[in-house]
Length: 350
Image (cartoon, rainbow, N blue to C red; front, side, top):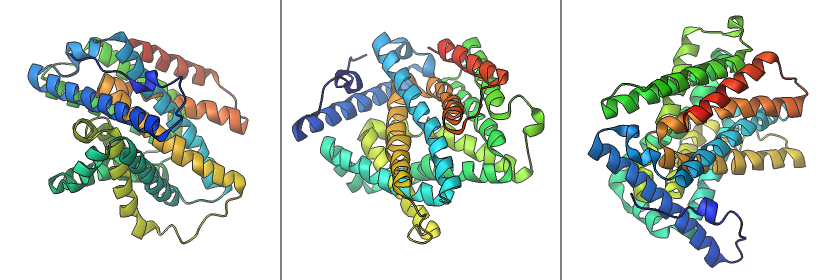
């Protein structure tokens, strides 16, 4: 295993004072993530042992950085859910309008960062016509379907049911990892999946089966959402290994936004935002999308898809805490139990 510096750590305490330093920081970040992704792909292909290879027990520093990236990314997603709810309920912004606009703007931000930090990788991706189907497929499964399937799942069921169904992605990723590695799940993986699923169910439903709504279309869209979330932890690794995190996210988000554009027509029915509304919209683009997805993928290439998917269940925890802080809700004993189960799981998978 080669050792790579981690700019998330190295630059965490220094200021970027010039374009040259910004270029260096982004370039080092991309190089680290590309190298980590290549290591994952090579070791899985050579050893045939998937995520049970020694690489995932490598340096404690690298593992800690990967775990931190996933946890912070999941936290950003959880807060973003609360912000999006405010935009939809108080400003009457349509869900697909929010999705389309933030995808296009986030894609542009990622591509600008890629032009600054990894222009050669970006140019290679744009000029490689044979890679276009891969980027379009990744955009449809890892970006468009993630947003649309969750929205339709909520439409046909409710937010709690949609969240529980989404957690089925844990089983999908575990099955993929085990089939690819030709092995059985470990006891730690089985216990981790069980704890995560029960913890999310308690947070999403309050432990009441009566709150679950499961019409057939809702079940279909819920499972499609779980499938797309599983794809998000698996598909991007190969493309990131070749082109880097920034280029991958930039192209897939822009493609997805452009796919939604003729259907959503965001220039029509613009929400009437005041200054607070525009700040919230900026937050959902920059923090809830750009920062969240960049950090999550940076974590995936360091700790693997199974650990990343398990740790990403921090999202409903953060969403619940955000709801309590912003709406005046209160924690229930069931919420506390759900928190504890997910916390135990997070220690179990380290």
